[in-house]
Length: 363
Image (cartoon, rainbow, N blue to C red; front, side, top):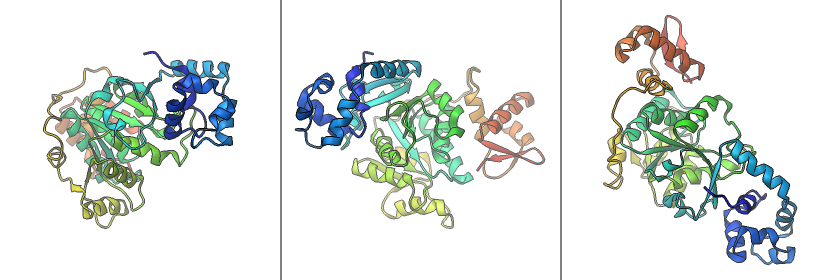
């Protein structure tokens, strides 16, 4: 896939967002023409002040651009612009779609029907279990699960999709070469192998606080609907739900414990008219009839990564402790195989082993 190096350069200029980028390209006709433009020509563009003009001119360094392009190749990162055939149509319909996307993984996943599942970083056992199960059920119907790779609900949404051999997209608020949060390093690697990571931010961009609200508009923008599993009163998941409403997309919410702070936001959404989710059918019945018809057959993995078998084990571990003997009966796995999966799940922080060989989901 041929990449316009000057377009990649322009997207990386400090403080040049999608709106200003669009104005520059419409006026000059190409990113290369922006590269060659004189200062007085740049200053004629609405939104381009002296500071931004300086940013554009000072960043015109061929050697640094070539180094950056080499780094994209080094990290296995692709780019697509808004005019590419791979650019998602639903995202293109939103108010301020990113002009350029950075991608790592299977780009063909962008052609799938997406559902977002988001929620609290400080999720309860209940919330994690629901996110994991719901993501798996939707993925089996052929939906791509979109989330933000954050701790808590986001992570379990990604894991739930992968556990059944489904597809998932992780939308990051930082560069694709930056591991954040650190605890999700192994999950990032699994998504790179079996899913897709996506960002509008150039390589090297740190996970700054202000990046995440903008990231959330992409999560909802890619998706036919957004499911909020758990959210506090000021959760980023509620920002994603607001974006979904602005984009004329469906908003769903899973009811939670009225005594839990992480349930306030989701319950409030239901009170305001979000579709209540008690089962996967509550989501499916609100979507167009021509989507969600492809089903991934139930079954185990091919033994290459163990992800589906680990997911099978994780399906039986919840917020109530379960003994290893009961796990073996439920999963039908041999003792050695089960112990290996449990060890991996414990190492990556998904579960916790309690005294007496009991297991629970980890907070």
